[in-house]
Length: 283
Image 1: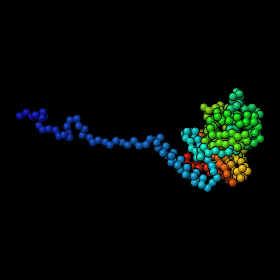
Image 2 (image 1 turned 90 degrees about the vertical axis):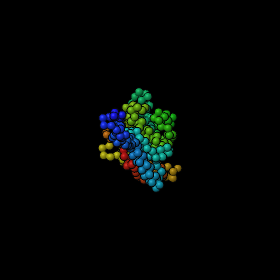
Image 3 (image 1 turned 60 degrees about the horizontal axis):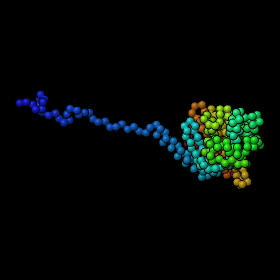
Image 4 (image 1 turned 180 degrees about the horizontal axis):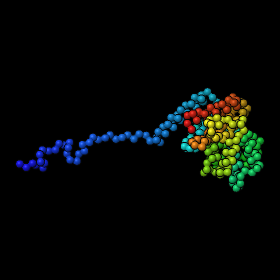
């Protein structure tokens, strides 16, 4: 009798071994997990949350302050009360310097000997008379306001009494970044001049942002402080500057504060705020 199955031994192959079936077990898909970018974003969010909490805790027992940080290496920004406006006091002198540099560029030249003779004490010694002279020579409020627009400062209102100019920390870190931006309005010579002046302030004024620097890092700074009877004799104390190193640090920091009981108390506050940003953001 012929075997209708077509095989020599007869019978039907078991279903599990039918030709075309894969007898090997199916492997479960391998989970991919978060990408390095997603992990970094999560870590950043944790750091920001922790910094927010630390600043709010300090805020509950201190005069009012605001702070902003711009990390040029990563492009990341952080701000606490970033759009709150404060009197500049003497940090406005950085704006005056930037405007002098822009006007000189427009004329196809470097700062003149007369302009440098005013800019040096203005930045290094925070000399008010030199500032008033340079502010006047530039064209006062209209001229500096025009320069601010070129620098991208959208929250800063220049006052004819230059120390009463109103600004925000967001605008101040923008200004600091423009002082080093190779694609910004300041040319290489102007950027170098700004660095040279802000890197060589008098030792008595080398406080604020430089307090967060580690050994071997480079800093620039301009501080501002003022007391007015309109504020009941309380102090506005501000600091703006940059911290850099050859390898991985390139950060602009601005801290503004007012209603401090004393200048020393204000210095302690702005340095504490700046240090908290480095502690938590890990720059």
